[in-house]
Image (cartoon, rainbow, N blue to C red; front, side, top):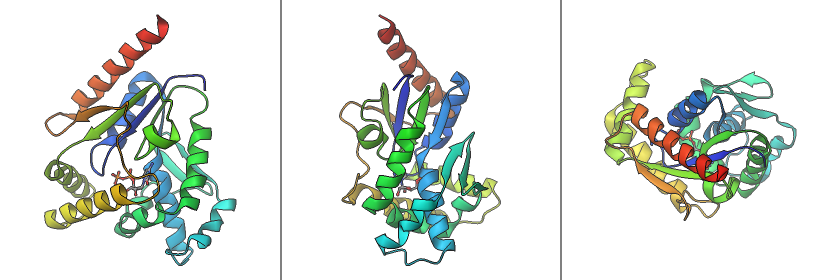
Length: 222
Ligand code: CDP
């Protein structure tokens, strides 16, 4: 696997995607948001009206094309970047991503996408399952109130009316589902560096990660 691989994991609203995207842009590297892939599968499953609880019904993945490029997610060459953020997708994505078959398919795609070049990949199981040999693993956290505030602000910016209480409930529920599922639960890798972002700005977190990359790259060069 030539190139430098960065794995960024963490719970809902910890800022993974925004931060990973900015780190990658600053360095001219490739960013891959694996959460967007699970969301795209969830969207297609809903649109196809399959029984979401039936693992076999996800066989449509055998003939589906999923790829993430320059902050956009495509399924079967259709740009679904905005569509995957709907409430219906958010409410069902933890269920869809709990199926071993779905995970196997997406993990294999993610590993292929990370094979060449310098990569910043974010998700829930990147440091533990997808890229266990990553050069740098970061686990982002923030307290629930702060994560909910960020989600709330994001929804408002998009002109979506939401209630703070619902945002908190949704985050707590998704954290619980993601960290207690049998398959690849959200868990910090033993060799990951934990970064609590509660009191940090996005720019500060980006700077810290770039510092960590610089240090590791220097070591590589020794
Ligand atoms: O909403 P947020 O950006 O925090 O989540 P996301 O990164 O878009 O991921 C959506 C959902 O996909 C998560 O709640 C997980 O259930 C699932 N996921 C996963 O199981 N494994 C990953 N590597 C990434 C996401």
